[in-house]
Each structure stands twice: as structure tokens, then as C-alpha cells.
Amino acid sequence: MTQRNAVVLAAGLGTRMKSRRHKVVHEVCGQPMIRHVVDHLKASKVDRIVVVVGHLAEQVRAVLGDEVEYVFQERALGTGHAVLQAAPLLEGTEGQTLVVYGDTPLIRPETFQRLADVQQMTGAAAAVLTAVVDHPEGYGRIVRDGDQIRAIVEEKDADEQIRAIREVNAGTYCFDTEQLFDAVRRLDNGNRQGEYYLTDCAEILQKDGRRVTPVLLEDAGEMAGVNDRVQLAAVEESMRRRILEYWMREGVTVVDPRSTYVDSDVVIGRDTVILPGTWLQAGTRIGEDCRIGPAARLSASVVEDGVRVEQSVVLGSTLRSGCTVGPFAYVRPGSDVGPGAKIGDFVEVKNALIGAGTKAAHLTYIGDADVGEGVVLGCGTITVNYDGVQKHRTRIGDRAFVGCNSNLVAPVTVGSDAYVAAGSTITEDVPDGAMAIARERQINKEGYTATLQHKLRGRRMKSEESRES
Figure 1: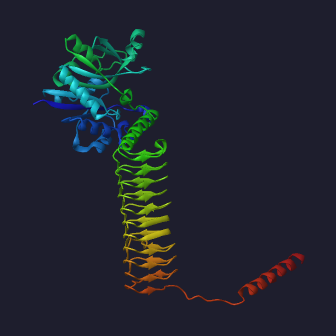
Figure 2 (figure 1 turned 60 degrees about the vertical axis):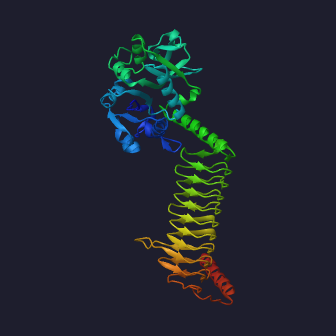
Figure 3 (figure 1 turned 135 degrees about the horizontal axis):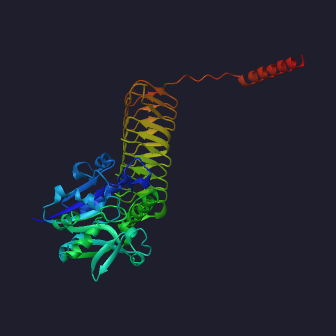
């Protein structure tokens, strides 16, 4: 039975990134770039993935875990030498082996599939992904012999005639597995870099009378790799545009794609409108008929149908159907805002369950709380959840009314249909249907203003007498 393998090259030093992080773990649209590469390979029906690691290998392992196999390249002796490290795992198997770089996250699954299909249908020893570009500087050039590749020449080793070629090597290949390892074992490092180039396999195979077939990219932008932060930003921009175009074609309105950021694994329902300045981060699921933004950030959150979020931050939480959040609200991890609830301006919610139809319109903190349905939390309500050592929960029953500027000192329960008078500090449970008043009785001091003014005049007169003396 034939097998489709993939070798992902991720052993480079990535010095131009000027980072303590491995180049391939830098994020593109919310995911490490090597995560995109591996996911796209899996989507193209690859059976076995081997990642070649070297410097900072533990960072790559932390991203991919046990879903791939690893081989270690002790010394950076070139791409051919890197592929050779996979020989103990893959040599002797029948089928195909894709070779890709871990810093090329834009290559689509369909492109990997097409490359493998061409190699299989033509019986070529190798199929090479190529592109025709206006500015080929920096790329290896494709030297053709009719519809076959005679050689791939790196720019540093090319003469002027070869440098004038506009068809370049995209750095992605599909080999017959047996012929791949036969060729890499015959590589030499007789070039200006003193390295074992994988690209030299094309000439070795061609001289053996084997077919090396070019597969021209329909979109040359797919082959973009990342060597520095400038290229990282360019790849991010390309992927972001691809993501937004996909969702717009799926029935989502994006008012201004230039100022909208949607990570690669986000899901958005039809007829949802995304307004400018919005960032939907990894792990977020948006339902239908929602209106998100302007200036909203949602991360790892579930948003059901018909929700409105304006100028707010929602992290690791669930927003139930028809609720509204914002403007200027902060919904922190572990929160669940119920259907039709309102979390208004300058309201913070943390690790709290908010019942259906409950309203916290403004200037309120709800932390570590279970709030029932139809509750009204007045302006300035605070659940005082931390005693300096540990957190405690506040429980508020259905249809309770908490007056403005109230402190609920946890652990405490406010019963269903209960009332808390404005300005109260509640330290004991409030029974169902009761009203709690926890504040000093008002005292009015008649004539206070006149007395105060008299005292102030006396002080001024004494001050003047003191200066004269």
C-alpha cells in the first residue's frame, strides 16, 4: 500500500527574526506558522508527517506535540542534509513524500493536493512547485528542458543568463519516496555555500533519465516565506485578506476589511456584520445575525445568534442569544451572559453567570457571581468577592433589584424578588422578597453653611492680623 508522507523543514536558525523564539512558532492570524503548514498538509490527505528540528526544537514540539514525528539535524548543512535526517523513518516505504518549509503558511491544501496528483499521474520522480514572478531576485531559478526541469540553480550560483529567468522555485516538492532518498544520498556540497542543496536532486534525477515536472502556481503569493518581521507582517496581511474574503463569500458583512482582523480558526454565521476596528481572535465562534464592533475584541469566546457587542473586550466567555455588551464593557474569562441580558458601559464581568434578561447598564463590577433572571443591578453595584486571601461567590436570585452604589460583600445571597436599597453595603443574606437597607440614617444639620462661612471669615481675619504684626 502506497503512503503519502511529508517532511517539514524547521531546523533553520532564523537569525533575521532577531528573536528568542523559533521562527516557525511566530503567529500568523492567531496560530504559529508551522501549525498552518501541518494543518494544510493534513487536509491534503498526508498520512505521515516528519518535522526536521534543530535549534530551539523544544519550542516546535510545544506547538505540535505528538501529532507529528521528529528528527534532529545536529548541524545545519543544507536542505538536502535536513531531508536525509528523515531517511531512517521513511526510507523503504512506497509512495510519495512532500517536502515543505515550516515558514510557508500560505500554501493551500489544494495546492499540496495538486502537486501530489501531478507527481502520481505523470510518474515523475519529482514534481516541483514553481511560480513566474516579475522580480525573481533571491529565488532559485527553474532551468527547463521543454516541459521538464533540467536543473534548479540557486541565485548565488547562477550566471547572468540564468538570473534572467523569471520562473522560480517555490520551495515545495513532491518526490517518489524511494527516488528522493536515493538522490539526497548522492548530493555534494560543491557550491559557494558549501551546503547540500535539496534542489540539486532535480539535476541528479534528470541525469538518471527520470522526469522532474514543474507545477506552476496559479497564485505566486502562496509561496511567500518568512525570514524577518517585515515578511511576517506581509504574510499575515495576505492570510487575513484570504480569511475575510472567505467569510464575505459565506454571507458575512465586513464593513472595512482593511481594519478588521479575524484569526484563522474563527467561525462566523451568516448575516453577521463585523464593523471596523474589530479583532476576532483564536477560538471564537460567532452566530448568525450578530453585530460585532466597532472596536471590539473577542478571544476564545462563543457568541450565539443575534448578539450585539460594541467597543468592548470579551475573553473566554459565552454570550447567549440576543444579549448586548457595551459600549466599553469588559467580559473576562469564565463568564456566561444569558439570553437578552444587557451588559452596558463600563461594566466588568468576571467568572459570573448572568441570567436571561438581567441588566447591568453601567459602572458595575460583577465578579464570581451567580445572577438570576430578570435582575436589575443599579449603577455602581459591586460584588466584593476578595477578602485578601481567597475569592467568594455572590448569589442573586431571580427578579432581584439592587439599588445604585451598593456593595455585596461575598459570600452573600440576595434572594429572589428581593430589594437592596441604594447605597447599601450588604454583608448578610437577604431573604426572598425582602428589602435590605444597610446604611447610616441621614442627618441634616440646619444652618451648617452659615456657620461654616463664619468660621472661614474668622480664620482669614486672624491671618491678616498675623501678617500685619
